[in-house]
Image (cartoon, rainbow, N blue to C red; front, top):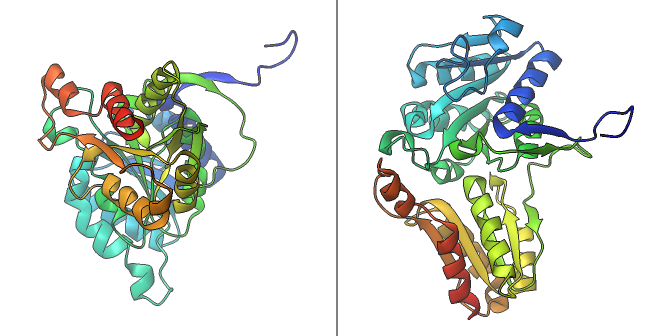
Length: 332
């Protein structure tokens, strides 16, 4: 901070950045409201909405019954009526109770009505493991939702994206699902003022490199960056791609990276079989096959329900050492 001036960057956390995004949305548009389990008096199960009830009142920050199908359906109905609801689902596992509403209503109504019924709905939910919350609270199912036409799926992995992805999501006429990896909520750093609106259509190069592309999203981004740091000490420069948007996928950024590095590792906290990592790998094979000097490597979670015990949970999840090992298999 300069003498007599204001700092250009603000120290904050991922959780606080998301809270400020919610606050800004509620302030700037009277149609916006937040609803979900414990978002009001309790301040959100992960503390994201803490203080918003006191600031905006119970009409704008609405606690709901423990029925995901009911309150996601209410969100769809209010979006159809002209509101801009933000629905919070506690964890991605519980979103399966609302899958009928998301797939058969939110994602299809615009198409089935011949363009007459847009559903400008935002659904936020926590995903991923690493916090000893056991199997029913720890899975990474965002790839399932990325399979569905008619919705947009995004995964903010940085404090900047946590702060600035919500506004363009609310402006989107289609349903947008925002997946927040629970292990990121306490991540802290400097939040610089935005230089441009967040682009929900494109991946981001978080670290440039020339030897191998590490392609990931969400909670695996810090691990990929840590692996890139370690690889650099061995003379291997890794380019780290943050997908950011899981539907639609930004093929152009990925294929351009592979064209530069000729090697690729896809890191995905979900299970390997039928995963988003499988889709990205297939697209690399389709679009960049002759650029590859080695097969695409995938680093995914073990195909088991996520364990509760810390050492077993860590063993089940992709770790920095696993990413480095995959990178060595590709380039050695």
